[in-house]
Length: 129
Image 1 (cartoon, helix red, strand yellow):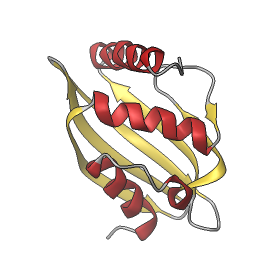
Image 2: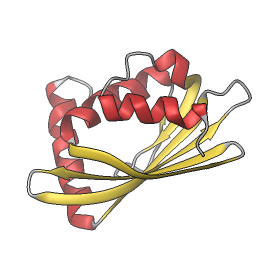
Image 3: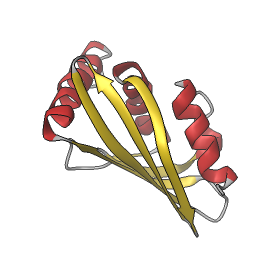
């Protein structure tokens, strides 16, 4: 059984639509990327990254979802070009039900490198990289 907290995030990711960021994330959400050491801070920065990610991943799908207490883990599979990858989105929620932290982990390394390269290209093109 899943909680509406992680279900709302899952639906946004599966539909590729993070236009309702204020409902999903706290103002000061911390986003931890699988390819950048320093976390991104704030809802706006997180929104820029997620908007690019939904365009980079192909055949994106969640295959597992577990939530306990204030933490949810959603396991996904996707493709970037000819590289298949799998990963997890780890969400930690605040008292108001919005995510205060999002950590993404991706494997294997070849998939993570493909993600890093494609994201770099998209963010540079958008003037955000």
